Image 1 (cartoon, rainbow, N blue to C red):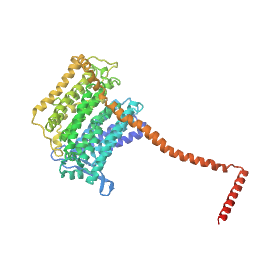
Image 2 (image 1 turned 180 degrees about the vertical axis):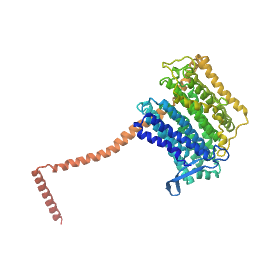
Image 3 (image 1 turned 30 degrees about the horizontal axis):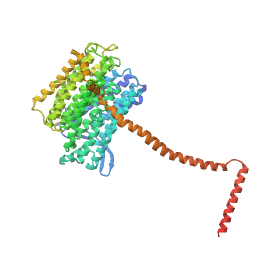
Image 4 (image 1 turned 90 degrees about the horizontal axis):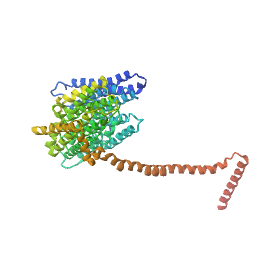
Length: 621
């Protein structure tokens, strides 16, 4: 099958544009960057077709593995460069390469007038390469290589406008916060190697499948929780979510790629990939669900009051990722992956649509300076409305199918989780349509002259709109059933009615506040000013982290490590030796004056000294 070609195509695009892009015309850069991802997507289709995926039936009941060479051999531990495809991988490959290709096409129009054009596309291709390595890797260590690679690329792309301090700060924040999660992930990999004697997925999961479920937390729980720490960092869950909203500092296509198809889904994929481990620790599964539900609710409340259109959708991503973790934590792994796929469709559409709005308004991102744009940019309007009804869970669109799978599983796991999830769904529908109504309805409040985006930008929007509307009919849970038995759910139709009513209620309330009676929103904000201010300022979490973590570490580093250890101890010791050597040298150089009479005097003095010592030695006898 030559699976290695899937990640190699975008890597070649990265190398060509990175090395020679400065001298190439834009058209050549476009062909290399977009064409390489298209080739990767086509090779995925060819591979899955050859494996019988599109024919249905019993295709990929066991993983297809290609072995290339041994990477690490140490004692009994053998780590190889192996790539594999199973049903979970098949879903991820289609999402990553399919949505990634559309984002690359869109970027051709969005980045047309930006500096560093070749550099942007080389980074974007490298991002695709590492994400595909992450998905295709057949062992934990190869997955970790891709995991760290997408972290590096996120740093490069978020900080793409490196001449601006806000961009470099955001890139640093993403990189540093993810290192916290990655430390936990690396410890988990060490524990897996120690306890299973292998890092290969097949061998590890084969061993653990026959083990009893832990009655109380033990080393399986420890591995599960450390894996979760990594997933919390990469998939922006509480308390490490703070990097993701700031990732908006990068170009809008970067936001779409990170938030929809690649990096943030890596944590969800990793937990699903490690489902056999989690199923042997009910304690760890409960923690996954609680972390996800807390994140979903918390981020949704922040999204209610944001005015930057990209920040609204950023907090929406954090919240929807929380939904995915609820699915995983309640044992509905297939539902979590199903929502990952539908979310990739409508969230990529939301971000690319937001980019189209920003492009139309010459860089404006503040919703308070928009309004009435549905007539000026109708294609962007209608495609974004498709994304809105999908994420709000309006039937029969994609978000309805995947969200309700998760909510049903949550209800059968713990009814209170269902009700918190329903309230979160209500808030999601409200803040997404708040953004859409502020953007497209009412009077125009801006200063620029809006214009519709070119076809290279709205073409991908149209494709994503179709997927957002109809993508729910791709029966991912049934396809994944051989890997993840379907979680308990269904049979209670009223659960669906309640969740749909919550979504429609959120849309109706947003229409009332921002279209029918706009003054109501201001009145409500004034009546609950303290609460509104708390939400608008994102609960001051960034300020809290800055006061309790960032500044103490920076100040402590300057005072203790720099002035105390570096300057006081290390520099002091090195400089002290230098001063002592210079002092001795100062005395010795007196003997090297260059005057013959001084040399004669030294010789006489030396002779007298030698004679005196001989005399003393003789007298001693």
